[in-house]
Image (tube, rainbow, N blue to C red; front, side):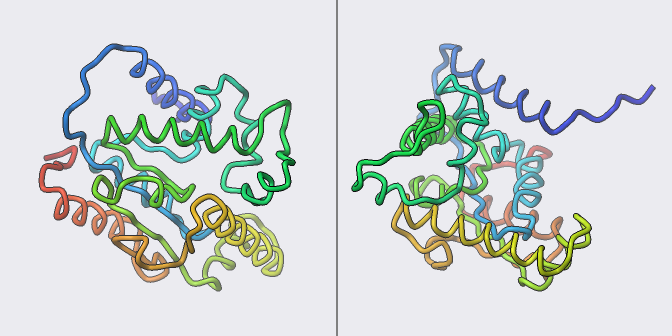
Length: 235
């Protein structure tokens, strides 16, 4: 009898629980851990889908929603308490200067940033991970990561979101533009960087013209070319 597919929430929780278990074990980390892959993406460009394919092909762990789960687990709070800060505005700098740090049940944006930094530091020290979003291409030493930016023409993203969610093109456009604006502000506030600056990445991929499978092939090829020690899960 065929087993029912696991829910996304269950898979996210399982990944986080594996990470927690690994952290509790006393293990010697490699002197030179495998590199990681960071995936920055426009909303609707399907960058996370590309990242998941890359993780599967390289035998890497995959961290998208899982990152928020790991941050919450590390901070010992419910993920919903941190979700409002995850790749969202307002400005951390402005809040710090004004002395007003908004919080949810005592959890602030600065708490989120601190926990994100600790979790990512641990994942990079272990290596072999695909990390999606959150401007991590600016947090991680470029010498240990292949930094990818996934984009797609706005018109195509609008049409695909409208078709998927059964909404008008105007509503789809508003959703996409707000999400892109939020991510752009998040990266600028946290790192002082322009998310669209091409020098912040090693590889740009346009999923408007390149299929997801091909996009994943390109990323894997780039990882292996830059880091020859990497081998795919299938060899």
